[in-house]
Image (cartoon, rainbow, N blue to C red; front, side):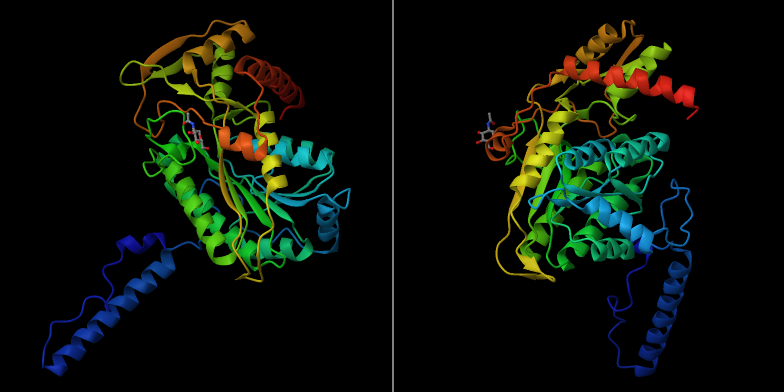
Length: 426
Ligand SMILES: *[C@@H]1O[C@H](CO)[C@@H](O)[C@H](O)[C@H]1NC(C)=O
């Protein structure tokens, strides 16, 4: 557990001095055993259960809010595809930005979808609940629960046989990792392993598509970023946990025959987006007349991002699901090699943040108050630029929304959502 680094070396490892005095030896052993017991009890008493929600999640872990015939009926109905060839997909992080768009698109084309989301308060939960409303109107049931809750996952997999899992639940954001590092480990590593454990034991095993991140390229300077480039120099804990996820995915693929596809998203933006992202809070701050900070790299160069519009990302996600081969294991046993893939999903045109701001000024018809400052060393990288030729070849992925077009759609949504919210007193 996380506390282990504080525990003094275990008695088994620190052998007492070699001695022929057996009385002394047994006294030393008793002493160490006693100390060990004390330390063990201490940590047992103070450590929270690994599955309790983190501090920021203010929900109390009450009795499970799932189960029962009514609940099962809802879940089954949502999971039922409209055609024989339709997929049955569990979408984790379904009330998130990408998760909600993917869920609605799958449902609209006739697939069965069950959503799962823990509605944590990393950003305004009202936005997540509003997305949930959108999903419900589309016929997607979203379970309020955590991927770390093993009994919940077991229950869901008991009720529904999934052909695919679209795993989008994650602790996102690069800067927040400095405030709450454990939530990244909890979601992106522990939660992912918990989900993979459930998938591996399920019979038949689903194929898994999940969200990695362009941040795994870290301080890589070779452009454009290609899948075979090195990803062992992360610049943030977020990136490190996503990279760990890629390695963990490989392990489950190798040992248990799970078919796994990792998608490295490049700065996804659009309607229903995440308020912690620059395009989103720049829009808010510009409209409120608040000064925005524009970062420049140490060599005075502009920070640039390969902004990718949500509809393009959704097409990439659906294509990854559609081209995923079946897992080869069953009941935890591998029967043969299984598919393992990693794709960049970007837009191949990095845009300097200064251009992002001038586009927003143009669309909002408001002049921004700007302050230029050096890029703080908080995990942000200077630029990202995707090589998408692999996704193009294997998935037919072809992004076709330029930043101005996409931002216009975002701003249109933003204005209508927040004016409605105010009216509805959200
Ligand atoms: C893009 O990625 C492909 C592999 O997917 C690689 O063969 C190609 O050389 C890369 N192109 C550039 C310009 O790096």
